[in-house]
Length: 212
Image (cartoon, rainbow, N blue to C red; front, top):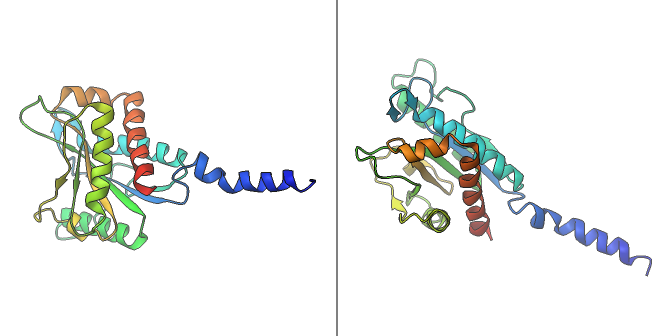
């Protein structure tokens, strides 16, 4: 009988990471797009690059609270291009590709904002490349969670071959266009810490579903 408490304690300790930290043991790379002289989409004096970094940091905090190990491809207003590269944009892409492929995360999430001339469009949409067979399923799981929680009516979209970066990322991952720079609603929401947390939590919960 004296050993029973010890056994129960050992079992509780054994199962605690899975129960308390549902992404325990998962390594995730977040790739906030653009940076430095590359602002991404622009609305007046607001730049996509800043929204991307702000949201990536919010998502990182939530994923880490779920037990995941998370790194960002950039943590400030800079790109990843090499010095004296003949094409700064191509160099930036190549270094992001190299970092993600060599670090071999369980998944990567590329974070960008969309832009359309028609400002009525808003919300989050997920895009995937067919280079990895897991990408389509990952995109479907994330999009389904976003649609359910936020009442979006979007479907995951395959990334065209004209997109240089995504056809070269060998590990599983997707591009999340988490909002529209052209949407006043999305811009206003994404400036709020509460909304960024809410959106991050929906994505994190979808990753728990994906991995289980």
